[in-house]
Image 1 (cartoon, rainbow, N blue to C red):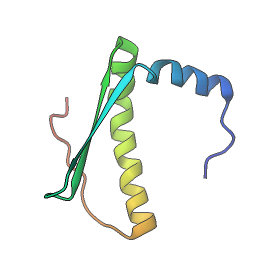
Image 2 (cartoon, one colour):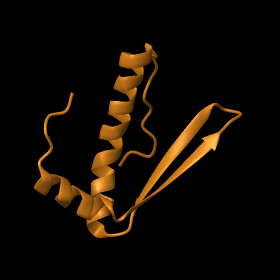
Image 3 (tube, one colour):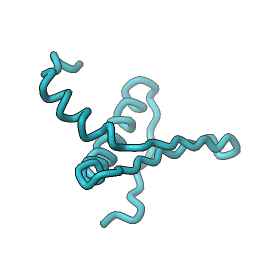
Image 4 (spheres, rainbow, N blue to C red):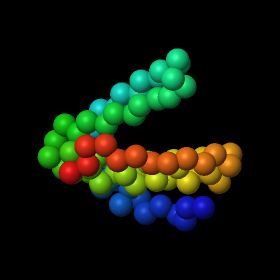
Length: 79
């Protein structure tokens, strides 16, 4: 699991990430959801670009580890 978090590093991340707006859309017919993150400052926009693929990978790993769910990750509009 995660070790002890450094309070200074956590505060620095929060300073940037608090400038991100999130929208979660649930599609009940498709059994899916979409998480959209939008940075409102140049620093938070950069953070989102780095965070999203890492977060998606973490979610995929947890689905496999905890529930045995297998699947694929599809990159769309990757720059």
